[in-house]
Image (cartoon, rainbow over all chains, first blue to last red; front, side, top):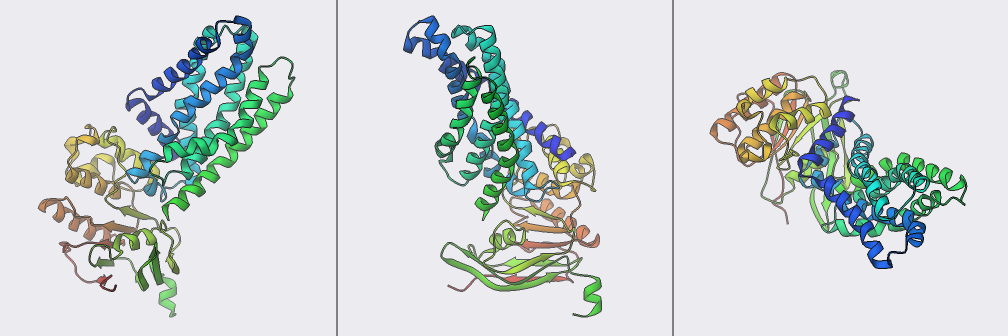
Length: 217
Length: 206
């Protein structure tokens, strides 16, 4: 179990030492969200209605931006190959990397959410539900992203292919994530998002590990 | 199939192994077995499949036919030009990471760095090391977690004369502790004890 935590700690240390990668993601997230009012005009009621959707799109795009760093560096320097003989099975190693990736990409975006909420004139309950939805839904996005990154790790331009690959899979997450912030939707969207997130979180380490094994051959 | 062979199964054995890369059959019908203390040297021209054979033995490349068997709970170390070390982590952090991931028992961090002669660089970011020093750090990785089987791909590349002597000494110690090694190399390694040492030459065929 110490190997598992050591791996997470190493991923975090690398992310923060690599020079503010988390900050780039956060700035990108805010930028995408902030540009929308300029594009559709400063109509406050309309902005408020669209705000959860805008936030989710911005978060999704920011997440895609960081996708390639999940396995690429370890593949290039051979660490992934050496990890095949670690005391942990490859599935556990992938799970640790997914957790670390969630901490590095999703948590900063969540923390930056109030800034975007201000720009999009979101109000208390709506902001709370959107934040809750992102807390529940981002593990699913990271899990799907992990599968995409693992499948494309052997491709030189995999950084561009992975987002296209996972886009259709991520659509349900966005639908129910945005649905949660809609006061008319009831509890159905929340439960569905939780179910989706749990299923993806459990299955994605196995799927991604399988893809990594196949890419080595 | 005698009794003593059953009581002491080899650390690793390969039977009738052939590997294809793309359209090309790299080698076929390779077989050997490694007992504690053995060293198998892989020789052959560039592209003969030495590195691929090591990866096949490590279970990373799939063999087209044949099998590789490892005795239960026999772990292995792989050392290739891909060192798996992060430039932005310090020497000590890199080594501690691999020690945690590969598990004990083994030398302590400081002792291992001392042994490979880079103890004074422990706090330095790994990106500043020369390629020879990086290779020494890779060797330290083999020391901090004891694994009976070493698969080494050109281990003496980028090492200076003292480094080669150190490598030979490390392999000799490893064999005395009951380990075995498969080594792909173009150089003659300075091994003290030539017994138990065999050579497998790959390639040469179109």
